[in-house]
Image 1 (tube, rainbow, N blue to C red):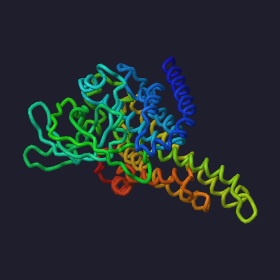
Image 2 (cartoon, one colour):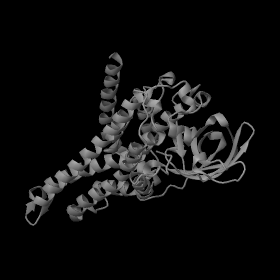
Image 3 (cartoon, one colour):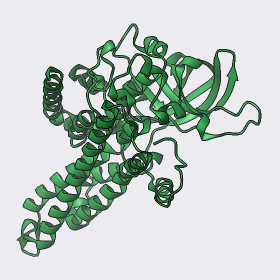
Image 4 (cartoon, helix red, strand yellow):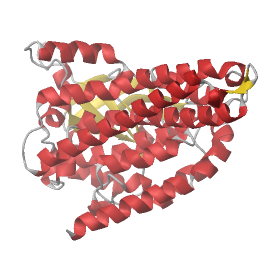
Length: 397
């Protein structure tokens, strides 16, 4: 009972901190976008508030809170600055995945400094070669959000079959490398989520010890090497179920901010001699958007609650549920884009001015769709196939 109270108090303190930070994040948003990177002082504010520690093991100073708390705090940040929230979520969720690696990997990263941060790029574009004790990795990886603030990176790759050389997704692994083993190419120049600093990471024939890798099939079975020391239910959740919300959650927060902006606009905008707030179409749209966003929040919390309950009971999370949860996370980006488009359209000329925050948020939502984890088509094909009685073809669920 005491642990529940402690977690509840931590949640309230973290939410209070995130809400108190909203004004500062909004004030810094122009500099964040112009600099193509979250300001260093914002990263330090996140550190001091404990945001990066929410999913980190207690053995390294973490809080081991539910992903629901992590993403609820993230939503509050996203309403102020989606780019900053995106980086907080993507970088912060790596502290959870590192707990799934062999314990020696966590010691390499956090042994001297538990506040060390990790970026990532999971697309398996690298060339992997198995060698004694591990692997050699080369490649150019794109979209490593927040990489300039991190001292390590997680990179995806498929280990070729030893005999045939075939590339099977069942042999996908995450490779953990220190900054000394890669360089950053600054090339992030986009129309939305400008401040995420999602630059390229280049690796040239770096050695990665086997213990600094994490296999997708271990993640699929919810039985990873790190569970030998991190056996809590939090670390028995499927890897992608926790990670993918990091690239859809800021979109939801941004759409909530669009709704805030649209409501404010309704008080100020006059159309055909009357305020937009008196227009029945505006009233109906506000109700519909508010309902959709509230439902989307509820679904997220319900999914994590259900998974944690099963993990706590030592029961497997049904594959059919995992397939559905995965699809639901990806669907958020398109749902929010459609809702934001409807609000932008009804805002008229006021919504398309260069200084329109509504438009800036809309472009952030649009940009979020570019992440492969927010693309529903392959996930829908897999989900439809399982509903028709087939096996999952996606082990990243």
